[in-house]
Length: 223
Image 1: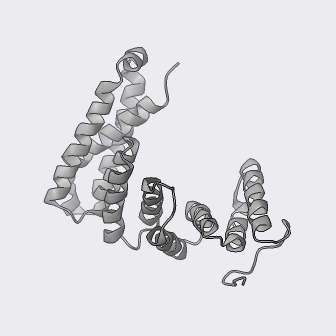
Image 2: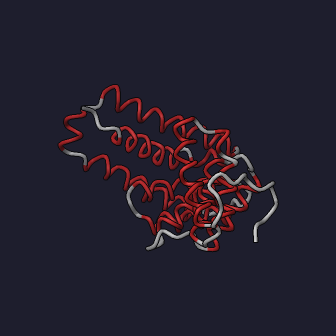
C-alpha cells in the first residue's frame, strides 16, 4: 500500500528546490515566481507517483527527508540574500512544519506576516504556526490579532473563523466563539456542520446559554 505522505514530501522538496532555482523570476513579478514553484512542486509529486518505488521508499525513507532538509537549507540561504520575500518565508514556514520544527516554522511565519500584513492566508498560517509552537497550544495576543485581521480582510475565510473561535474559547469568550462558528454552518457539508454544531453547543453551554441560542448580529457583543 502506497503511503500518502511520500508524494507530499516529494512535492514539498521539489517546490523548495524550485524556489531556489527560480528565485531570479522574482524580479519579473510574484506571479511568475509562485506559478513556477507550484508547477514544479506538482510535477515532483506526479513524477514520484509515476516512477517512484513505494516499497523502496518505505524501507529507506531517509533520502526524501534529507532532500527536504537540503531544500530548506537552500531556501534559508536564498532568504539571507533577499530577506524581503514574504512568499519565501511562508514556504520556509510550511517546510519547517512538515519537518516537525514548530519553533522554526513559527519564526519563519512571523517574518512572512510582518512582510505581508494584508495577506489573509499568510496571517492565518502564521497564527496557527505560533499556536503550534506554544507549549500549551495557545493562541497568544499576536496570533489573535492576526486572525482578527485575516477575517476583516476576508470575512468568508473559513479557516480564519474556525481558528479565531478556538482563540476566543481559550480566553473564555465562549458566546463570541459560538456566534462566530455559527456563521460557518451554512457553508459546510452536512457531516462537518453537524460536528461544528456540537462544538457550538458546548461553547454556548460554557457561556450559560441554551444550545439553540441564535447567533448575534454581526458586530454585536454580549456582555
